[in-house]
Structures are given as structure tokens and as C-alpha cells.
Image 1 (tube, rainbow, N blue to C red):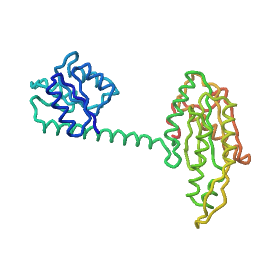
Image 2 (cartoon, rainbow, N blue to C red):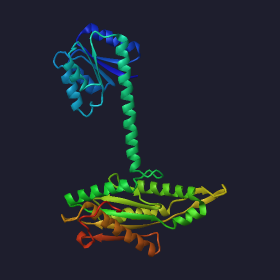
Image 3 (cartoon, rainbow, N blue to C red):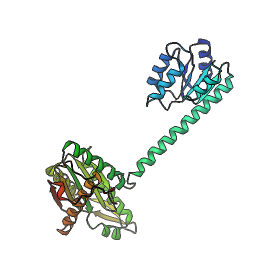
Image 4 (spheres, helix red, strand yellow):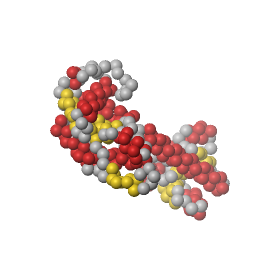
Length: 331
């Protein structure tokens, strides 16, 4: 049921409009002056406001201006219902509303304009929700629900900036599922997807609210650990490694018959920057350097036999190859 606020100081007109709208199935609120109308809109958030111009305390124009200046009410549509017929009033009113109805008005016309305004409001809300969903999809890995590479890059640069500003440590952990290609080749990609989803849940359950975890490749994952020193970063990576080793993932053979639980392991490379001084290097360059160090540690973990954690602590970030003009991560 759509909720409509009728702001009208003339009691007869207010009653007429309100009864008409209620008979059409709308939930109606009533205000007798501008100040009351403003308060009701902010408190009740109606779907539409029918607003007289000439009202005590605050004019309809002033109410509309304040509603448009408030981010919480700026999207609520307004229809002016007023006796002011002059062209300049219409032009002014239409600049801050979706419609302008002059008194006396025909009830069928009023209802038609209310329906049109509410239909527009519904379409705008659907568009907003759709745009928000597309924005989330742009930075989210569809299979696991974690951030994707793009989403992670945005978060990493933001956290690098914060670490530089407040002199805090920051850690990046690269993780890779060991011999994952063999899983796909032996059990099929569908079961491989189940493994990826199970590993994503491990990352989510072992990370803190402030941490950012992402899937950046086929079986490649990364975790960003703000305000985390070497001890905390190694503890996190080891918890993920142990939890992954303990997983038992049920499944079926390619022919559909039951298969024994699948066991997997992960290797991790950790890079910890204990302090990032104010140097002539972009946040993207520092982020790239940390990712490269974590990736090098990951390769070392693989070469050492897999299912282990290798870490490098970086006390002096200037020891790393930094390009002050580097672009986004991965370019």
C-alpha cells in the first residue's frame, strides 16, 4: 500500500483529497501546515507528497527545498496542489516537483497524476536496486560470493592509504589450492566448484570483519589484513591452512555414483609491511609490491612441498621495487 502525505491547510480540501485517496486504497497522512508536513515526511518517509504552496509556518516551496537538501528525502516525489496559477509559480514549482496541479482541480485528474507519480517512483526504485546489484556484481566473484580482483584492488589501495596515514602495519596473504587442476581433471569442474566454495567459506570464517578476502583467479585467493603484524598474519594463514587440511568435501564421480570425501590442502605466501613511510610512491605501486612479495612467498611454499606458509616481513618498504607512476594493480 502506497503512503501519501497530504499537506493542506484548508480542512475541506484536505478532507476531500484524503478521502478520495483512501477510497483508492492509499494510506494517507495529513498535515495542516508546512512545519508539520516537513516533520511527517522525515519521520514517516511517504511514497508521495501532495503539497500546498501557501501554508502557515513554512510555505510549500520552503518545505520542498528542505526535502531536496536532505539526502534521506530527496528522492520522495512532490506534487504541488495550489491556487497559484501564474506562469512563474508553475515554473518554480516544477523545478522542485514532479507535477503541479492548480485549484480547483478535477478528482479524476488528481488521481491520474498521483498514479503516474507513484509509478515513476516505483520505476526509479527498481532502477536504483538494479544499479546497486550491478555495482555489487562488478566487484564480486559470482561462484564464491567473495570480492573479485577489481573489488580487492579497490579495497587494497584504500587500506594502503590508511596504513600510510596512521603508521599501521598491513599484511597481504596469497593462497592457492594445491594441485587443483588434478581435482578438476579427475572429478570434474562441478566438484571443483564445490571445493572452491568450501575454501571460500574457510576464508570467511577465519577472517575478521575488517579483513578483505577475495578470489582473484581460478584457484587463487588473497586476504588483506589491515593493522596486522607478522604474528597476526602468520596466525591467520596457519589457521586457514589447518582448516583447509581438515576439510572433507562430499561429492560424486563423473558417472553420478557416490565418491569418497575429497581432501584438499592450500599453500600461502604472506607479505607484512611493518610500516609504510611517507615516500614518493603511489598507493597502487606499494600495493603491487606487496602482492608481488606475497606471490613470491607463495611460490616458495609450493617449491618447499606445498601445504605450508611462507612469510616475509618488510621493515623497509623502500627496499622493494616501487614505481611512483605505476597504474592500477595488475596493469
